[in-house]
Image (cartoon, rainbow, N blue to C red; front, side, top):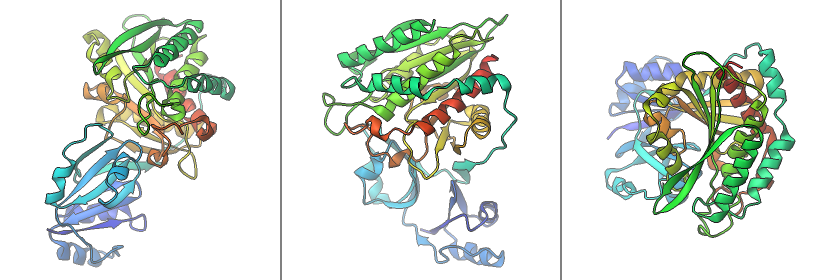
Length: 411
């Protein structure tokens, strides 16, 4: 069956990856850990020793089956299957080892809170990067300084004051109406767009600010989902959703406020989605209804989902996209390094937020989300309240997203 070993930062990652390639083993890296597996363990281990690489676990662990990658929302997989053999735990991303007889019990995942797939071979699943900071652009600096904790916190408080923002509730409609009034007060052109959520009806809120450029203008989207849900106690129970996702929705409103006085070269579109918690209904239907000419104009989609709970010693952000999003991830990472103190994680394995439907259609989209979100055990419960909000983290993620939006709009 073979064996596997998990290598940590104590071994240069390039050395372990090169070694694996050279001697028929496979590898996958998640941040500061690399798992290497092979059916020819003795050959690999001996070559490692000859190369002067001291493996953390020289005997290796028996692999009776296959390694799988799990991507989870919160701790959904770990809470459901605490007995699974965890090889690497990076919060949102897990590597698990499963014998063949166990695989069938994971074949159904009706709630879509996690996904499982064979572990991709010879690649990076999640990385921690330190891009070079660039000289800040004066106009961007001025706009970033306009980001206000007081207005952001007032938006958060207004959204959390709704008993729930469950997509099929009247409170959700009230929250949408309130958000629309705010965006209209800034001068945006708004539209409430009906969507289906299962057998019920809900809405997306779309707000536009046309650019003033000549010819064909690009379209930049900044998005978040407005809905909340209480999984633990039921959909009729309180669901304040302070972090998931009043934090992202309030971020869209704050970016809208900062940009309200400008007429950009390119078009800006802000979207608050409904039906995200039930299965990305709002974003999937939005993308499916996009005319071809609209799709081709979209240069970037920046999505905010859970941006305000500090789960790590220092503020961190995960930039999750796909190969089509690579240049956008780079822009966001450089903006984070230039304008914030965020630790930056990146991944090209997208899952279960409103960036995914865009990526599925090869539209550049990135999820910006707090680092190690699986440590946030309050989401989807009545405990997702303002007490757990970290404004320093949220405002830094807003500043990063605003900086890239300003650059793309050519303000």
